[in-house]
Length: 79
Image (cartoon, rainbow, N blue to C red; front, top):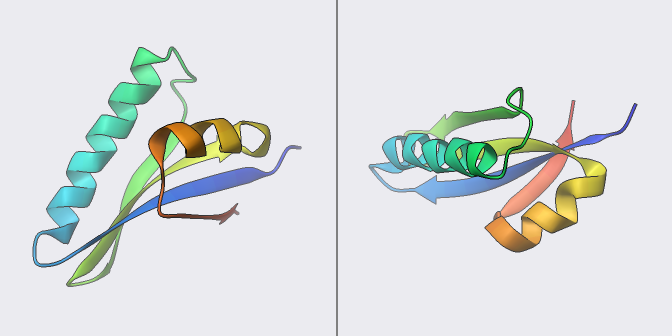
């Protein structure tokens, strides 16, 4: 099975969680517009009161393509 990569966008400040939730909406819109797999894994994580993130899990072979288009702040192996 191909490895999965979690593309991550970090947001900081008092509105970080709301911003991450809003960013996830844009990720889902991108997935739909591009006609990609509707079972794509997206989500948000509240790391602390002042730090949240939005993420999208993509196959490793597609990671560079979406990294270059969407400019995530970081990525990690999805388990």
